[in-house]
Length: 507
Image (cartoon, rainbow, N blue to C red; front, side):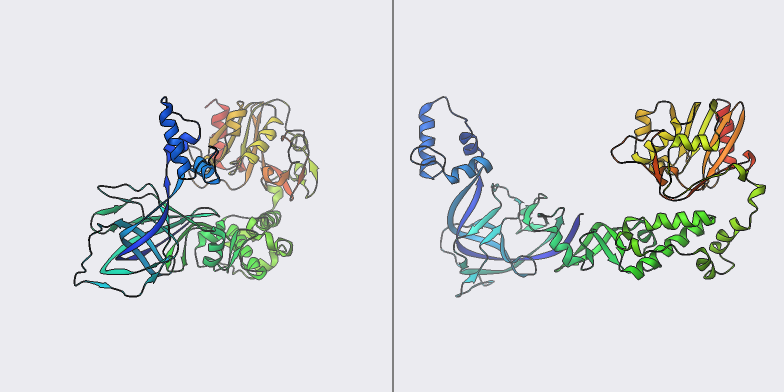
């Protein structure tokens, strides 16, 4: 998760006397401690004497604790004091009172102008401070963090103010990156490089999102049908707005879940009705669709208590002039015997064990075929592609084609491992109108075309043992009822039928 927060910060300016400790990057010392030596041994002896003087080496020439830290990090604590002009925050909601930049001033006596005031009382600062990275004409800082040794500072105040912009970017649980922009004074432009801050993303998330569910790593929200329809269907909202302290910003994406069980029922029913509104559902399709929605990760906390709604109850709440009513009623009104050869339909029952080879044998696919075409809109991830590859291996055919939505493809398994299977994108040159909703197995044998319609995705409904390659003869457990029914070739989707005719003729 990535959070970006922004605000404008006011920097006050003053002149003061400070004693500081800063960690300066000394790569030259680090290289020497790690074995680099000069040809002139006199130089090496003088360096050793200097390192003993600053307590990196002890009197016997061995590394001290400080020496170990410098060898590992190249950061050498360095002390200095003098007169400085400082830029600092005052009563800031995030920084408090902190020095964010300083510049050395000349030591001559300082004469305040009329727009400057001297405070006879010291101002107390935090010990730990840091420098905003800037680009100056005559200097380049080789440190960022520094510590005040005299935290109570007497100040000569300027009445000038600088306003700079700050972006806090939180990308993991341990750090925050601060990006500043603007000017410090009139001649210092701020660099785009970040300053790292010690923070914990999780702790800030709980403040930003009080309804954040830690176990599921999702935001609990109350479902509102009219609000952000896309986010409610995908269980994720992009660029989610948020506030923290006096910052405002956004989270790049937030996964969602229902606020409570009652809300989960309303949400699940909304998604189910959306599915019904899009296509006709038989009684079996209705059951399988509701089960699939219940399996969504967003419903994990409520799954055991989410009963499958009855088709009758859904119908009672629908008026006869809407799509939901007709999409549920129409399949029941059809006389299936006029469309299907019901005698040869098979049903895979929930919790049944079967393999793809057994399924192909049950539905009566012949042993020698010229062409097999499998149509399913969603053969897009590794699991689905491995399963459909095993399914196609159970059908003996000279030419094998899978038609799916390649624009959503997340896997290259078939492309890399199954040279005998051709993948076709249903967005390109196959459908002239709406895409077919059902799944189809189409087999051409001895010039004749046989078609089977499948109520649910076999690739998702059959669960195979973990840590095993999916093979045509390996048995898996059926997750929900699936019916495979032969239909007349003339009842096949016209665009699919035209595609099969072209494939038969070698196109």
